[in-house]
Image 1 (tube, rainbow, N blue to C red):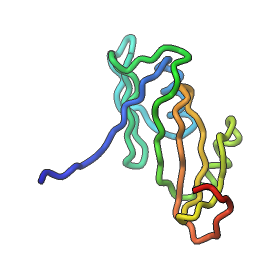
Image 2 (image 1 turned 45 degrees about the horizontal axis):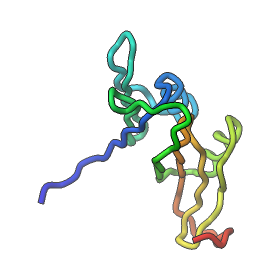
Image 3 (image 1 turned 90 degrees about the vertical axis):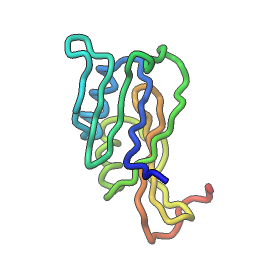
Length: 130
């Protein structure tokens, strides 16, 4: 059977410039592609081997449309990332240690997509949620 080599989720966005700025400035992604050059409607972004796509001709969403995506990032030093993001805006929940041995917290991007950041830990659980 053929191997899967990568996955690049494409998020529908209301405002491409705002979405690009969030992923670039808050999360440290770099822009690898903006298309078309003069009035972009699509972006590809990357960081540490993780890639996402934003927008595109069929990737536009109306302001106020509910979010439909949760992205789950496996990261190193989730506590430091939490400190960084907490200084920039609201945290949706966490950090918490779950029974399955991961410390996690979440934020929302400008389009309301839930971004969960997680790392393995041997610390005891701090919440009852499963």
